[in-house]
Length: 133
Ligand SMILES: [Zn+2]
Image (cartoon, helix red, strand yellow):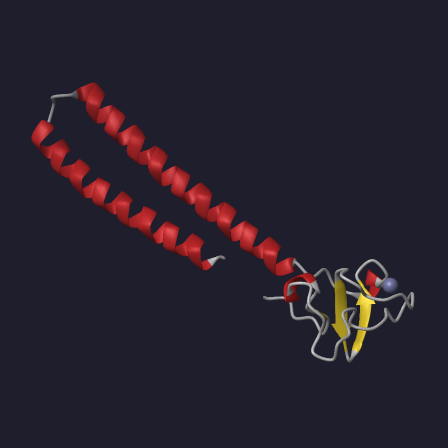
């Protein structure tokens, strides 16, 4: 579940390249808590008001990065699964090496199929990780 907050980060001066806003105000007004200019500080825009991130009372806000935790859990699980698949392939191939050349013609075919399956899993893994961005 993605976090949806009514508090959205306002553009900072830095994101505007340090240029003033179209109305000529470089500071986005004053902080509703401390009354000081927002300046180039990180701040939050809500219903036409700005608040310095350092001034905002965060106690009433839900943790905003729950979705990041979920993403990290998914990435960790995918990494573990991929590591297990690579380890299993290595263990299997090392066993074939130890037994070499017993059943060589069968093992070579089996390795070809395993290798293809592992390559497919790795490709899917990379695509899955790419979607987590
Ligand atoms: Zn403030």
